[in-house]
Image (cartoon, rainbow, N blue to C red; front, side):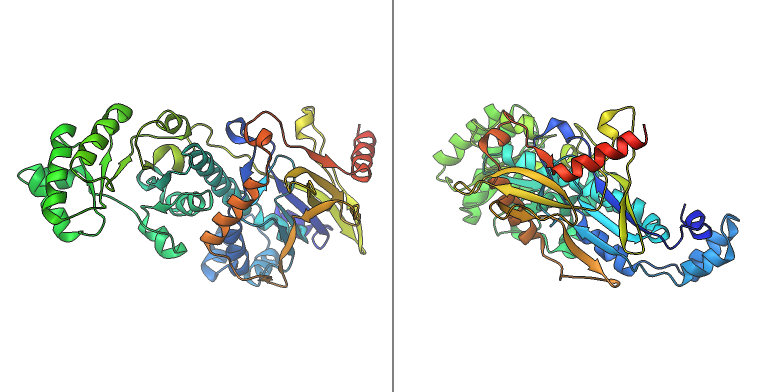
Length: 434
């Protein structure tokens, strides 16, 4: 595609591409935007090495002029985007790329895979976190992730979505994530008995240890854990359950811990958990949940579905809207270079709806609003310093708090409205192409 544009009369024409999604995963009420930092880092450093050019030349698909262009390539366009952690809805632009046709085409795949994956995991993580009603969620998914990058970027997205910590050490190093983890069943198996295994573990990790108590028998496991905690003077450790009737067993374990004077000792559970199974565990005395495979793969609905569509072109400083029409009305795009606003109730501060306008429109000054799309990349570099994950997590939490109880309770759909000017342009383009 890029080579084709390069050789055509359209090679230097400025284009506007929107990235958006059409449907909520799991029929949710909102999603969480994630993946922008990965995109900005990629675009800022995108280049083609001598080895890259040699490989492309061997395909016998590309002209030498195009290969020379790639060897000197640096993205010179503009990127408009939402803040990471923003609450997002279908059919509104998450990113807008303004660049020549060749440049814009080269970015498509990486931009889509970054947003599709990380927004999917951040959204799934947030549903799980909200289901836990304030109890801690630990991301335990690396071993079930679809490859190394999915584990690392998935852990990052899970933190944006609200997880407290991750067991992925490399993600913790790269993104300053709080690390978490417990012993494996194999540790217990390696020693002559469970009590000895627990003792040896506490010799190495005496600070807030978590003991896995279901390698052999949960009843003897909790008995040995209490015995070892008392022997080492541990007051604030934890035990983890990874199997069985988690409600029944956690109640029994809580009673035994309290009777032993270990009221500060916590109970952590795991075992293929997600938002649905966690809701069923809320009446149990469980302090935290280790969530793995169903989070890191978003197993209920593992496709986010962002698309990359041309919405406008520019010639001699004039922007011309473009539309894609489909027999399926849901696939007809919203044309033009746009602004996106969130409109709030002046009294409650709750978000009322989002509004899409043509880029040169002015919003009614009487409305309480926030412009969501910001210029984040220009002249070959990002416009702002990267935020840390804690800031993104807090931002997501703040934005969710602006949604009304009816939206959060799935009793009402959040609206994304088009300005009358934008609606007229869309209708006119549909009529012209019908």
